[in-house]
Length: 202
Image (cartoon, rainbow, N blue to C red; front, side, top):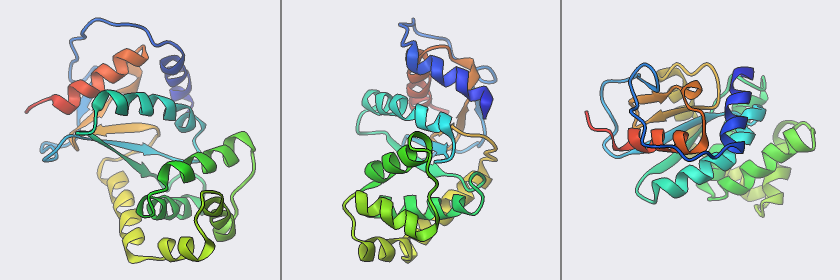
């Protein structure tokens, strides 16, 4: 993951104005699937245990503002970091999405792991996070154990396998294009590339 640190730190700290870029396959993005999704979307693969993913969050907020309401950013937690807590936090994210407290819960988890440098230990630690987000233990437990949350978590695992994600953060656009993250040099160029791919036909 270290190779992402300088890249994304630069993206966040250097919002340089750029001219329209001639984005090219193989240089700025890769085609990872032949068929695109029916509607534009951005699938963000991340881990709560990845410090670069935490630093990436403000950039994704800027991106959503540029994309508008017609293009949805979907967050996909990966299981391959954090040992046994990786899958548990995937399930927690799925439950937070169902309860519509994803942003609050995500912020609290990132803060505890990377700012406070405190581990999240099992279900009790996860429930404490939800309680801080305003969700009772009973409601959080019900959501985490629910069939819909398990379905969402399983879909995240399948997505990680389908797109062969090995490092995070990573972006898949319209289910077809993967951003080559080290090809961009500024926040503006990154946003321009993602917008270009969401609008790309064929």
